[in-house]
Length: 368
Image (cartoon, rainbow, N blue to C red; front, side, top):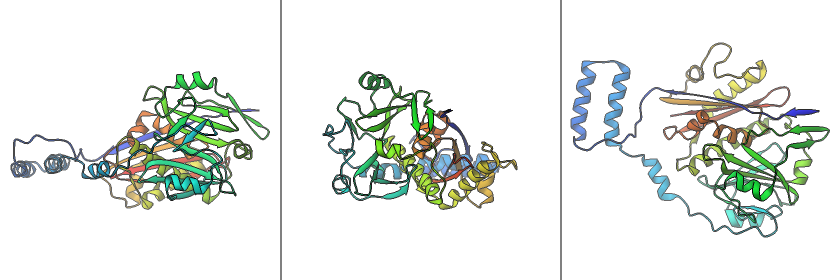
């Protein structure tokens, strides 16, 4: 029995004011521009034009993103990366089979531990989302899974972050077309977004950025024993797994933003509730849309939950087995990518729900 593995993603954005940090010319003083803005407000009290005028004036006194400049000043140095010693791939000089003590000597203390679709924790390590990796351990504290979406990959083949897909296939050959889970065989239908290889006692998924000429953007390495103990494509539902998916998607989004030179977003517990409500509604009533069946938009739902915003966006994904596959799919879709990499957003909440077949619905809500 075959099952096609697919993904569905949609996005929406609402802007209620213009750019605050647009560059301006210096010929006039700030106060002259303020005087002119006040005169225009008095002459015409159209709210949208008032906001536009105010933003023009504010741009003059805030000509750069202070938070972004601070992040750039505190960005840690990239580590020295060595070729793998025993495995074919390494992430931040860490390989499958390494022990927790050595990992944490290399990367520091764990920042967050959340349940993943393999029934073990993804333990996230980073410095304000720089040098971001996720690691899973077994009962003996040995590494059984690795992930990164930053420039931390080394391999004996010369494959690294930014390598072209063609060079990956030249080195590793044809990727898998089918994976077996228990009595089920799953057809891999990646649409060129990733390749899966069985290598060296592990399953290696290499993700590609279709907006950067199909170059390597992330890698997931799963020990064969961990992969094979999972008999179903979708993990069973639990509250711990739902929360794990939510926080993992949040962390993956921030790691991608930092990789692209942006500041990380702040977690919003309030909007997480709004996002989860929408995911639960879609899962229960079997639809997939930004507007719910009562006709409410994403922004109507935020206002109903008393969440104030001047700019907001929503991403939806459905059918991916994990937050990693959901995030990488979103990054390969232009509208979603624009939300993820929007410099003016400040906050993010993620809500996940599973339907009766344990298929996840992901809702990301961004705002400032």
